[in-house]
Length: 221
Ligand SMILES: [Zn+2]
Image 1 (cartoon, rainbow, N blue to C red):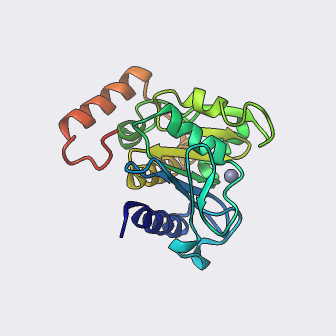
Image 2 (cartoon, rainbow, N blue to C red):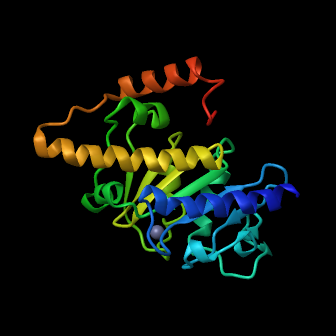
């Protein structure tokens, strides 16, 4: 199996796990990953329920969004997904969902603060949020990339959540961690005033974790 074939299988396997973690129902969400050998991108097709799909339904494009192989239409936001990879050579995988607790922050237009050590270890700083951007807005493919900076997640205003990683496992782990943190925050708010990590605390925790546990840490980004 060549590297693209292998990546097609990895992408559909991650997509099929999203409902298990409460991140996606029916056809919501997108998975996109870059093959380091060819530079091609594998992306889930638009608006299709993952449980019905196989690796052969995945779409392969180049970084300029020309379709190399695929029988379906790619996600309408492919210019954004490839934009992240163009800006960040260290990132090769993206998970986009509408998971409700994290998406709630995008609805109130507030970044998700760092609340727990696990979240600090994976993200290193608060998760920024864009204003609402329709797909035909000229900032749709650029503003989320700018706000991401050197981070690993960004919220699309009144839309959903994007997490990234050096590989698919890292992007998925961040999607799950972020939804869990946002859910914890909602619960904490009902019983008191949640404490949040300062930027310095977040960065310190992130750096410590990556240096100390680097060899065991699945995502080396
Ligand atoms: Zn979406």
